[in-house]
Image (cartoon, rainbow, N blue to C red):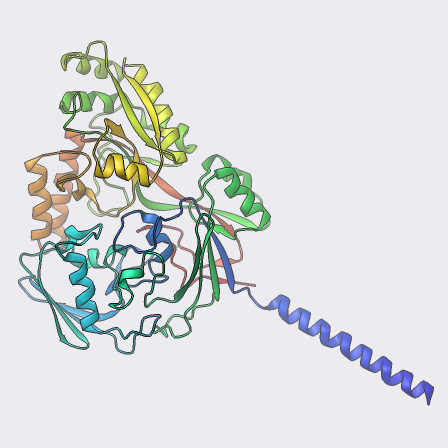
Length: 503
C-alpha cells in the first residue's frame, strides 16, 4: 500500500513538473505586449491643436488623436475618420464621408457635428492652433448629416488635404477639448493613462478601437523622457527602454554594431537644420552679409562635427525627400575668400560680432560650436547663448523675435511657406517669394505646383534669409525583436498601432 501511495505521489509530482514546464514554455513563447519608448524632449502639453512643439505629436498623433485623413509611413495621404471625399471641379468644395460607429475614449460619438466643431475651433478668431493659417482659406464648415461634412473654401487651397493630416488638425471631442492639454481624449488605438511629469507618459490599448483592419498588439506603452545622450545609450543597453526612434548621440551609433539584442536604423526625415537670422536687424538686413555668412560655412565640416557625419547638405529650405527638390548647395558654396570680400563690400571689412541663441539640444549646441570656428576665419565673432527649449526659445525667438541668429531643426514637412508667413520669426519679406507660394495653393495639379515649389526654393537659396545647413537623418536604435516602427519619418511621429514583438 505504501508503495502504491508513493507511486501516485511520484506521478503527481511528475505531472506538476510537466505542467509547470509547459506553462513556462508557453509564457516564454508568448510575444510581449508592453513597450517602453524613449524620447529626448518631453512635451509641455499633450494637445497638438494648441501648441507647436513636435514632441506633442510624437506622443499623441495616431496614438491618441486621429484626423479626417492621415499620412502613412510612405508620406501618402490616406483616409482615416473620413472614409472618402470628393472635391468639386473648381476646388472650392470638399465633401467628406465620415465613418460611423466611431467613439472617443470617453464615449462621445464622432459625428459630422463634432468634426465641424473641431475645425471651427481651430480656425476661430481666438484660436491658438499652431497652424491656424491652414484654415484661412475656409469659408464655411457644414454638417450636412451625421456622416457628411462639407468644407467650402474662399479660394483654392491645393494643400488642404495634406494639412488636414497634420497633428494640429486632429479631430477633438466637444466634451473633452478643453482638457486635452493634460488629459487627452481622442479616437485612436491607445488611451491616455497618466503623465508623470519629468519622467513618462503612459498609454494603454483602446479595446473599443473602431479600425478593425488594424490588430493592435501592444497592451501598454510608456514614453520615457531622457534628454542626456549618454543616459539614452545606458537605458537602451540596460533594457530600461526598448527603442529610441530618434537617438540623440550619433557618435555612439557605432557602439551598437554587432550587438546581439539591439539594431540601428538610419532613415529619412524632414528635419531641416537652419540658422535663422533676424532679417529686420542689422547687419542681417543686408543680403550681402547673409550671402557672405553662407559662403563662410563648410556644410560638410558642420555635419561631421555636429552629427558625426550623419546628414545631407541643403541649399534651401527643402529636403531631397520632397517632391520637386532642387539641389541648390552650389549657389553659395564654401568659399572663405569670397565671403571676406563680400563682407568688405557690405561695409564690414573687419567683420562684426553677434549672438546666436542656441537651443539646449545636442545637435544645436554642436552645430553652433562648429559655425563659431568657421565664422571666426572670416573675421566674424559669434557669441553662443545657450537657450532652454522649448519654453525660453519660443518666448525669445519664435514669439518675441528678440534675437540676432538662432538655430533649430524645422520638422514640419513641406514647410517652405514659413518664409511667407507674417509674422514669423525670420522677419523676412520678399513679394516674389510670397507670390510663388500663393501660386502653389492656387494651382490644382501637382506638376504645376512643383514648378512654383522649385521657384520658391531658388529664391530662398539666393536671398539666404536663413543659413541652410543640413537635413538630419532619423537615427534609431531598438530591440531587434520589435517590428513595425517607422524607419523613415515623413512627419514627426511615433506611430504604434502596428508595432509588435516577434517573441
